Length: 173
Image 1 (cartoon, one colour):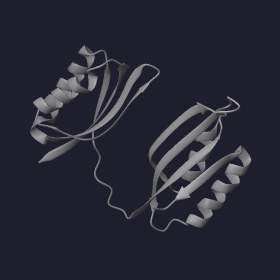
Image 2 (cartoon, helix red, strand yellow):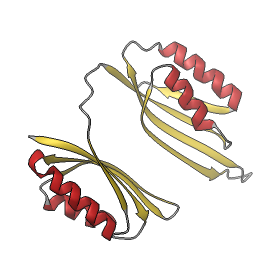
Image 3 (tube, rainbow, N blue to C red):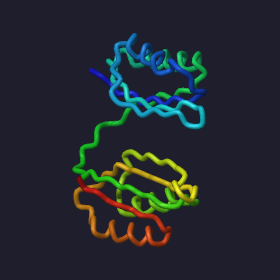
Image 4 (cartoon, one colour):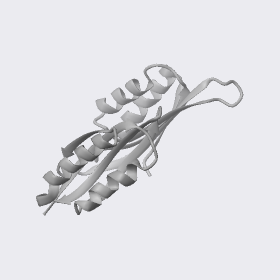
């Protein structure tokens, strides 16, 4: 029987970190199922979903924590939860607007009020080509119960977009 581990890493970025971590995973007969990694402000930040035979999970956990420490990383290992069994609908949200305080807070509040879960989010700022003003971009993968009133969610997001002066687009593809 296999078990899931969710591992987060953070520390100074440098070449070879992922290879070193993947070697530890492979040496313990585990599978690297899913991951998100980034270099942010010269720091490596990663989250990895591993699948490992249950009998090897404790040894893999210890090896990851020791190996991460040797690489100058902090590691947190958590046993993965059970797979979601409820019926959900997946959709996405894309947002663009002048960067200012509170955008993520305000959008996530509206989503939470409507029972929407943020499965994944990516944000970035960049300078506008002509003005140099900072533009904020956000892309979110979302899920919600099948019975979600999508019209009510769209109305709430449109009202918010007007209030905070951003463009928000929902896609149910």
